Length: 220
Ligand SMILES: C[S@@+](CC[C@H](N)C(=O)[O-])C[C@H]1O[C@@H](n2cnc3c(N)ncnc32)[C@H](O)[C@@H]1O
Image (cartoon, rainbow, N blue to C red):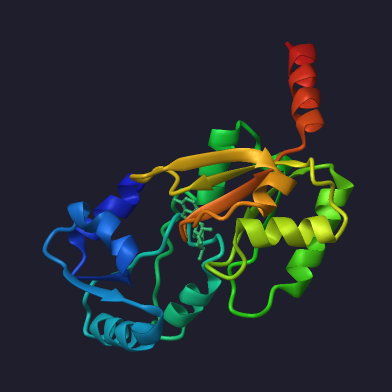
């Protein structure tokens, strides 16, 4: 799901950096760029190097998964701290992919990410709030690997969300090894399988779906 604009940027880049798993996906689209994979522990050094190269007039690309406006703020801030001029090239988010797979519209969705460094206490509270409200589908990013589907599901059941509540879990959307799991919160809480770090959860509101379809038929 790499965009054409993203491909062009990679093709003409002098330097391409990003987490190794991201770079593995974009490698086929590189021209003659130097490639510098990074990990959480050395990202500051790699981005520092990219900043120096940019100051020398080199064309540097920092890659992230999906779209840079979705749960990528930390990386973006690290880049912005180091360069004066930055072009933000939007991508296709896992959130959009999940909407497409689940057949739901973004305007009917509340999006919450637990994928952050600080303890996502208020985000868990919001998650419980929106699930109880039951007006919009909820799309949720877990936190690899301490807040993954089974832990989240059992916490939600503890918070009083009915165990029969349906959810869908997508892994590695649009990538090799893509997988989908469907079941109830209770079944999810009992799962012992490992999930990929590329995992996204959808809590649909089935009535909303039916209502929207009826509205659309009314319009036609
Ligand atoms: C730091 S966030 C970045 C999100 C990204 N900017 C986006 O637009 O999807 C990383 C999280 O996004 C989700 N994610 C990213 N790509 C995914 C994919 N292909 N399939 C499922 N989830 C994905 C996972 O929850 C992953 O842990």
